[in-house]
Image 1 (cartoon, rainbow, N blue to C red):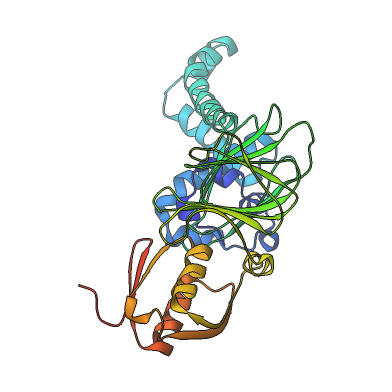
Image 2: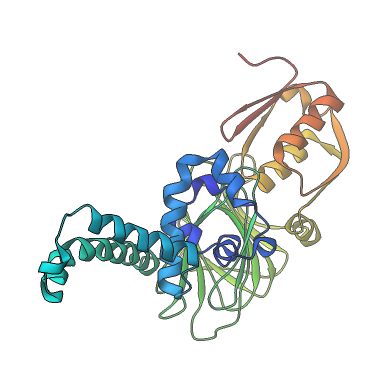
Length: 337
């Protein structure tokens, strides 16, 4: 479920559940919007603005909205005392032209705001316990991992297919031979034609990792390299990792596929392994007490579980201390002060 408290007007207008609610299909919406608005009344102005824009652009104004607009006009006319019998139609229209035009202009500004937002592209975000699956206009699918942001320009799939990523995402790229698909991060850019691969590069964390599942990609921007690095399936490029450094490595494609399905599996794993998997899955930084590197091992499986639940299970089973400060987590044998 998206975090609607972070949505603005444009976000609501691109949410299927919100549109279903606007159409009056409460079942398809799958979300109790009235209860949510009662819990977050400060979000009502944006919600109502988005509803008005939707109805204005779709031509599907419901009866309650029409009545509200009519009542607004009636109150506007009553607020200005006029002797109708002494006014011709032209003078009536002249008298009310300005206030009515102002109301329509307000709606026009809202519509213009929305379309300007559309023209400037869209930014997709995921929160700490959220993974979003997106389908781009060319048919490519993106799984956006927690604490990540994907920016898709308005001209995407017209002149090129170039997008920006801060965080981690899995890409299944539709084949468009004359338009290469490029993911740009803070450190590198990865280009493909039709393939599937994972990119991890958080602006506030060390290390970049690109893992190729199928097809072929070219990685550009590697310090000191004269040309792009070509990866084949089962290969990954790591740069600036505090432990592994930089270079090309082999990896287990099945484990990445499992993570892509929302499945985390540990079998007699050291806490370095546990920390690495959790960091990759939830987009966080994890520091493990050196005393736990070798003496603690964990076996278990989690499927579509929030990070808070996974951490609590680890804490109860192993009896150590877990402290979370934003996107940084400390696992230790003693309380951190």
